[in-house]
Image 1: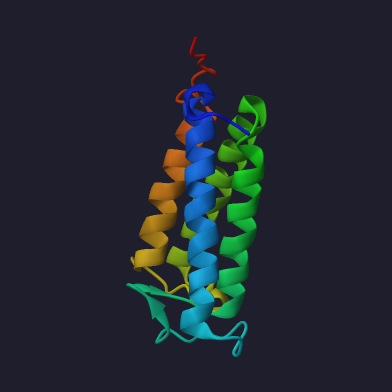
Image 2 (image 1 turned 90 degrees about the vertical axis):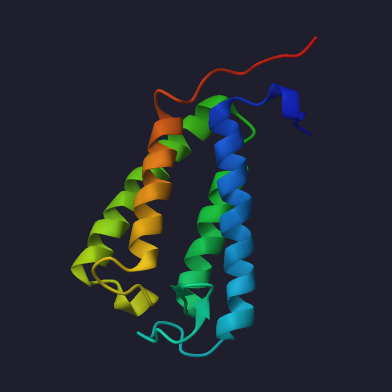
Length: 137
């Protein structure tokens, strides 16, 4: 088990994003159910974010990857960087309107803005903001 005092900033972000994305994916199924897996339905929302079951699966996968990476600094840095870049690309694709099968609307939809912010934060903590492991005595 990892004690909180021994985590680097990169690990804290990976663990936090992992938990949040996993929870959003699981709670998303309470909103969407298990039908219309990859449909462009924008009426089923978690807060202001449209979802469908495929979108929920993506959130669960990202959450698990982030959580699993959080135990080692080097892995957390790599995963933060890679997933951050992926989320920025996803946001750009969302702005272009090519992700409707994931219930991601085009232009300045909430999902796209959240993906940009999450992606930039993740890239930051995968690079210069990663820090180093701190040890408490």
